[in-house]
Image (cartoon, rainbow, N blue to C red):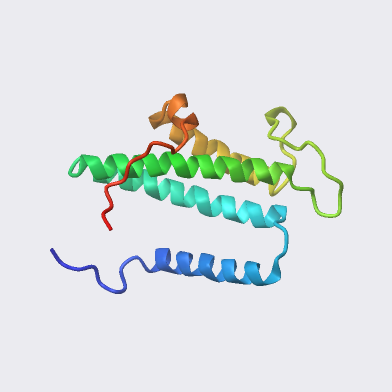
Length: 150
């Protein structure tokens, strides 16, 4: 088997480098998260969620155990995106006091980025629910075993 070339997956590596840079900059500034910040993070998580979905689908036939682990990661990443989505709606709108702006489809569109994050989250939720049971979505990670050896 050939080793991956150093230029394999350059956009994924650039995205990871961007996250690392942002983490260092945020650590230095100690600024609280704002809605734009959380919306951007949600976009990143849902993009990674889509990638994991595709990887799990293509990995499972030749490597079932690895595919199951990727599918589990897919579910956990959706749970993380759901928590970030909920946090978005709990953050105050810039220069306004906090209000209950949860996802209420009957009141949308509320305007960007609320509409954008809700549409993105609904699409991710639809994708994960096609392949995941409600009990899987609500199951904590406790009890998960790993095959890594030290």
